[in-house]
Length: 245
Image 1 (cartoon, helix red, strand yellow):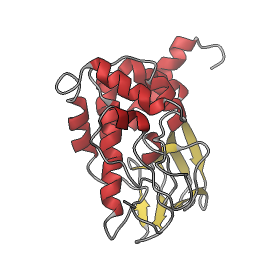
Image 2 (image 1 turned 135 degrees about the vertical axis):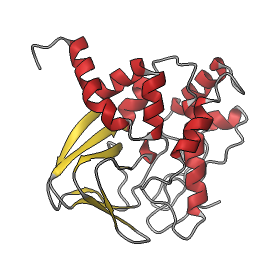
Image 3 (image 1 turned 90 degrees about the horizontal axis):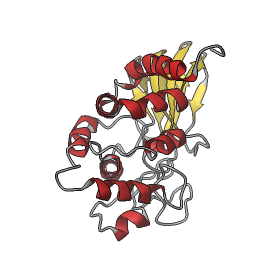
């Protein structure tokens, strides 16, 4: 690819990764509404991870230095949560979305059962790219709030919080993409998104207390100052721990 121009490489990576990412409801809609953003995301934030049978992708209690969303391209993996039964994951399944929206500790072990390939999306690079664009149709901060709010609710259930999809992504996408121009102006949305990234690592919600293995995360001060009514509590309680109020 060294002889290929940069714009052409951007297009090649978009053609490679967009069909993989669009299995997730958020990215399916985001690719439609913001292809100019997703071209850069596919080029700079997305890569392929080769796994062999027996490889451990992440472990319970791990706070990843390079947090990522994983989408299975061609492999079979097994996810074993701290609480609950193991589950096999097949192509077209995603796992570990939470690091895109909040500071995160993995809540189980992800292990490869067969050789294969996984698409990975670097959370930090994703957020750095997204904040450089002004897109009126999409309220990303609204989706982040709803996602972490859902984690809080799961933390109060017997099953607890895991790295697996929670099943409400499509509903949250509908609510988020309809928010701009209805209850918020673009300036409101842009300000909130900038607030999420202020004085913290890009894309991470700041902790209400000092982060530890069993400390839940809270609302970003920037969101609180703007009167956000969302209660974004325990997104990353320690293994076996639930949401703390």
